[in-house]
Image (tube, rainbow, N blue to C red; front, side, top):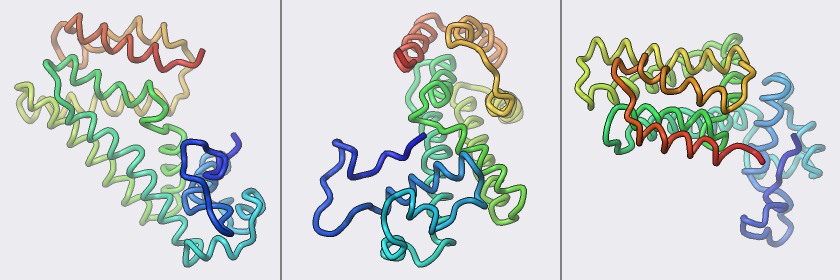
Length: 219
């Protein structure tokens, strides 16, 4: 996938002066390389060629490669962990709606980047500090899902167990790279919800989620 540069995005403010790329462009380009090829291929010279600028542009924004890698981790934390936490905290009329808010992260690619998540997990296999970031992210996500269940009357032990079942299932779904259409997934979601929550899914909340998921599928 080609990197969309700040200068090519009409939604961004136009660049001025001698600036050709922004800090965001460097992070975006590095993210694509991380996802496609792994952290070992995130190299300043290769990125400068990709972006069509000199390496001096990089050092305007970053002290070195390690600073870029830290920016990638912060970007991942915002894109993925913060998104899940915020969706679990969204107002909901019932546990069906609350769980569907969690599911929204995984049917809208603008909310959760599964490729980025697993690229960081692969990176963590080789570097202990990144492993610690993964562990902290998983703990924060599971805590958010647990708190979501507790808000709807589930006791702590049950809330924790249901949160882990829901969260680990969802990540496993992406890890296995399951190939099925959205309609196939949506055909199972009511049964999934019944199992995850231990109660019948609310029809209105379920219908709203299905409409949300369908609206975000490419034409």
